Amino acid sequence: MSPTRKKVTIYTDGAAEPNPGPGGYGAVLVCGPHRKQISGGFARTTNNRMELMAAIKGLEMLKEPCDVTLVSDSKYLVDAMTKGWARSWRRQGWKRSNKEPVVNPDLWERLLTLCDKHNVTFEWVKGHADHPENELCDRLAVAALQQPNLPPDEGYTEATGSAIRDAYPQTGLLCRACGTELEQRPTKSKPKPGQRYFYAYHHFCPNCGRIYLVEEAKRPISSASR
Image (cartoon, rainbow, N blue to C red):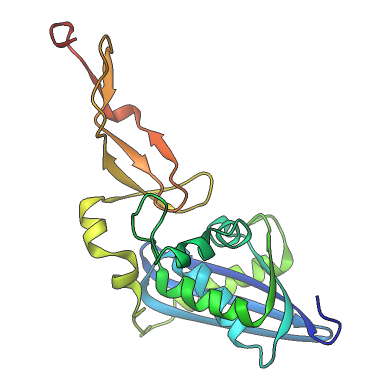
């Protein structure tokens, strides 16, 4: 922290209903006795894009380099920044360690550029837990997505990668670790000798790489084929 820089706290939240669908973001900036609320929405986007957009729009309000504490209930956002994932993705040309493309690279790039200008500390807060500022941001985001004639989110199609979505359909379920929407992917590994069943597909988190086995995907292996 620099003694000459202003100390600012930014509370943020994003929402999409459904996901993907109309989306909104909300942010509250606090600097000493001064407070400012901002919000906005898009006709079709995702919850994660709006979480990122809330942080971006909040930081873009600052007219000079500041020491910022950014508070969010999004583990997708906070973990990627505090654990260094986002900067690693940028160094790797927006590819993950498994060489698959990163989702939302346009917004991650904007956010990292702003963090290069400001000294930003990210803090996670549990959502819908009666945190006054977090609840306010949620209300701002939801109100924004309900407005008529919302503009398009220009980065949505490119950032989500239509080809990837076609190959790996979204499940509508969220990763328990980071909150990213899970993809349904076919299981490529072959059954091992003596195995009585296998999983035809699984749910995969494109953000943190976690795999979730699905009971409905379990298939028996006949004794003749073992």
